[in-house]
Length: 119
Image (cartoon, rainbow, N blue to C red):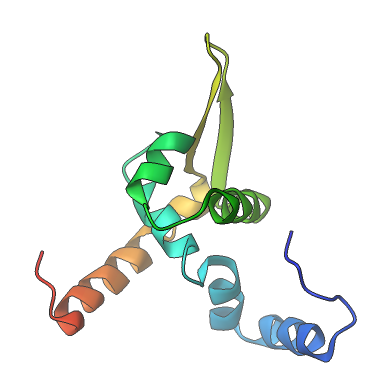
């Protein structure tokens, strides 16, 4: 899923760090610009792809698709094809993804307190 050269020194270092540091492992799975936003938007339940796209306006289709695939491969998001006419796809947090909600809530609260934004 990730476009990382497998034999690179950077990739070897990333793997070594992830093996000994659980924080690095977690941040590799949920870190970055878009993954936290995707997970946060799925906190209240299933969303269609188009609903996720509207909830995160600056994200490109390519980035949303790429990150949804990575989150699904990492077992944090579930993808369900709904067989109606017309068929559509819905995304939701997996059990493992839902376990992240308390941590995401703490990060959101900290962000609100320290960014000068109000709820």
